[in-house]
Image (tube, rainbow, N blue to C red):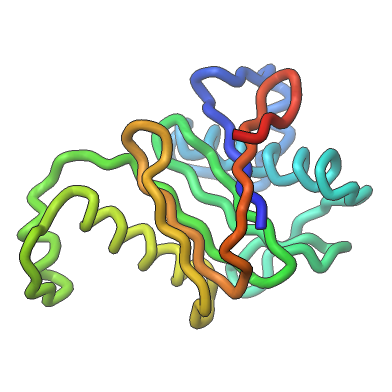
Length: 176
């Protein structure tokens, strides 16, 4: 499995190129920007990394997929990070910036009875939950890791636990 990301604070696309990846309307300009970066990331990885000549995307059951490839992907974004996970099997990905919140109150909604409630525990739980929803099935494998300085990342699916993470920079993909 491979995970690709773009830091939108460091990777700038001309507005006309970015807008060419927009296939939906959004209420906020920031959400539209994240969506376009997600499409750009997926299509660039498909072409450059997986050699998929036609990375056209269609939506089936509210989930994007390639029209002309069996490769699966899932997109997530938060703040300045846009991320996509790819695998030969269905996959769900979620990334969240770890903000301070009232974690005890949030956990009450989910009937959590444990001790040691923390920011990391909440975001591990939350990103795993969201990745499972995006998977649209029962995961056999989950990976949940802190990412960069203040993010939590979860991938759910049926994959080997080996993975590689690549950053897309203006010079190309760098394995981190």
